[in-house]
Image 1: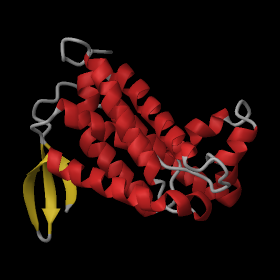
Image 2: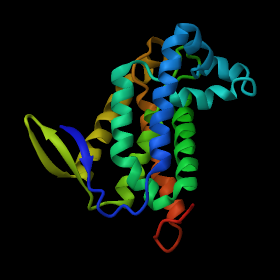
Image 3: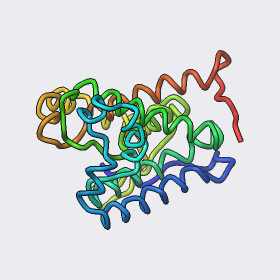
Image 4: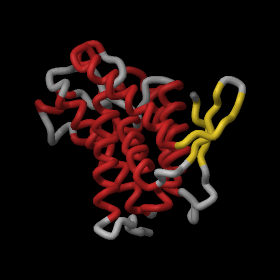
Amino acid sequence: MFPIGDDDTARRTVPLVTYALIALNVVFFFVELSGGDAFVGKWAFVPRRFLANPSGDVPTLFASMFMHAGWVHLGGNMLYLWIFGDNVEDRFGHIKFIIFYLLCGLAATAAQLAFSVGSTVPNLGASGAIAGVLGAYILLFPQGSVKVLQGQRVVQMPALIVIGMWIVLQFFSGIGSISNTAQTGGVAYMAHIGGFAAGFMLTLLFRGRGGSPLKGA
C-alpha cells in the first residue's frame, strides 16, 4: 500500500509551516549533497560525540532533522509530511505546530540515543518528527481516510489502518535492529517509535482537559 493523499475538505487554513518544512528539507538536502561526507559528519547527530560534548553538539540536534540519506529517504518523508502534516497544523495552528514538530524530532533523537549511546554512526532524517505528526493525526482524525495506491487502483482506506500498519512495522523492525543499528547504521527505528510516542503524548497535552486542540496563530 502506498498512501497518496487524505481528506482535506475540513481544513480551514493554508498549511504554511508544513510547506515551509518541506521546502527547508529539500533545500537542506541539496546543501548536504554539495557538502558531501564532510557536511554529514559535521551536522548529523552522532551519539558518542554528543555525549562527549553536549553543549558544543546541540546544533546537530536540529540540523540532523533536515538531513536525509538519499532521494528515497527524502521523498518518503516529505510524502508523509505533505499528506498528514497539513491537517495537524490546521488543528494546532502554525506556531504550536512548529513547536510540536521540533519537540517530536528531539524526542525521536533521544529515543535513538538511549539505545545507541556508544555509536559513532551519524543519525539524520525527519522520520522521527514525522512519526510524531502521525501520532497526532490518529488522535485528531480517528475517522480520517487516506487515498492509497494499491496495485494500479486508488482506494480509500481508514487512516487508522494505514498508519497502524506503519507503526507495527516500525515496532517489530525496531526490536530486531536495536543491537546492529548502533554500530552498522541502517534505519533508526527507535527514533520512529520515540517520535510517534512523543506526538501522541504532546497531542493529548495540547488538547487540554476539554478534549479540543488548542488554537494558535
